[in-house]
Image 1 (spheres, rainbow, N blue to C red):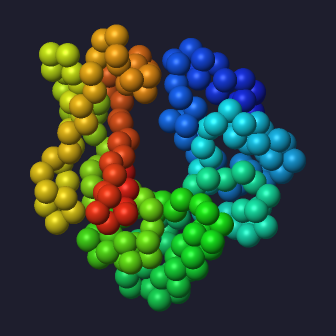
Image 2: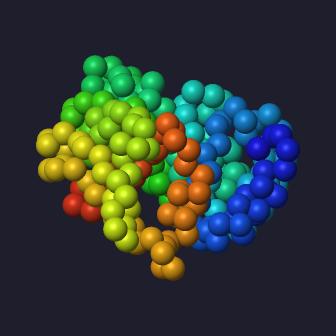
Length: 212
């Protein structure tokens, strides 16, 4: 956000790939926001005007000023994995996560827990009504070739997760051709061989949205 012209870059990508701005989520770290506060607020507000969603990454590891949660146009708060990994065995980390979750709900922010690796951690964040979780419990980074399986007329995006989390593999099916969704067109144009892919699925039963 502090280098080049990020607003122009985002506008260009939205136009070039015909993406619905609400499908685009940009992650910003705490430290980058605070390097030039006035500039950051100006850029992020203009991005919000485009309809893009803003996620604050690694929350709790930087300045962690509660004031800028009100000043900056943030939609999503990502709880750093250094807290997630300790919530089961460290009462202070658990208390911090509980406070962050309650604060985010009060401000109308979506919460994402990073670095979930155990069933116990998943259940803890479910109890905190965390909106999304991500981590190796669901999937380790995988090459695109091992995730996207072309089929006649479709792309199947498949990844396996433990049965305790969700039964069976997940399959995301997208039609390719004239009716291909813009996000899939973007994916097929930009993903390179050997690259890794991050996926998200919705768990409507529990209110948790795991991401691999």
